Amino acid sequence: SYSFKQEDYYKLYNCVHCGACGTQSERFILKQKFLKDGNKGEGLNSSIEALRVYGTPFTKNKTRVKIPEGISKESETLLYFGCFTTVKTPKYAENITKYLIKKDIDFTVIDQEICCGYPILCTGELKTYELLVEKNKQLFTLKGYKKIITTCPSCYMVFKKHYSELGIEIKYFTEYLTQSSEKKSGNLVIQHACPLKYIEFPEIERYIRDIYTKSGYTILDVPHSCCGGGVGHQLRVDIAEKIAIRRIEEFKEIENDFPPNGFEGFITTFCPDAFWILKFYGKKKNLKFKLKDPCDLLL
Image (cartoon, helix red, strand yellow):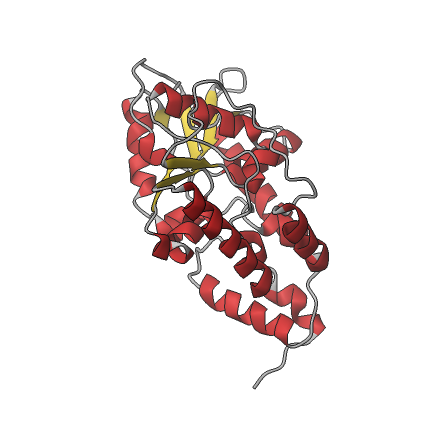
């Protein structure tokens, strides 16, 4: 019987949906009621307009990913980058593409993808979310895809849960990663993808660690916590920034365990949102770990 007021916004929308607390489903329902009660989310109208007009949270649905040669024009397997990846972390996407080609994986890509809908779902705005889902379902059915490889945890979760009736097999790109044929070396910190670790693909952490250990890297143990990515930097930048800075400081503490002039190490993540967070805030806080995407470390 409780009716939300506008002043509840900052308490209700202070979540980046990492899944660590296990209450993300309840949060979705509460946000839907918040909007149904006549309240407004900051920047929500502009997000709705962008998604309806461009099919992405960004004002232009033009990928920045440079697609290498060797990709099939037609295939039953789609490599789906996701809107954030194509705009904010194109190099991350390019290296995934190169890696799959090197592994002789047959796939194709879409010139202009439509957002999976997760960013707007996290606001509680169901109508736009359902519109995006329906558009994607029609496109995937028309193209005859039997498998979709995703590069973003959010896309992976949404496709697994809300597109299941299409009968399309959903894979995460890390499932194609294997031990490097060349012996690698160096200290490595892995920022795991929260939505996969906590919600949809918990065994991925052990799998990823095993690949890089066998490839020759020395994995540095850092207690896991959220980096502030996900939908945080789109809904509540202030909350996302606080979490991001705290996480970067935790990485800097690891750096302090090494001699000032003798530190060598890499940091990676298999989440494009986390990759951007590490790049932006790592530079801001002078993080010494060299940021590399997961495929680059194995190529």
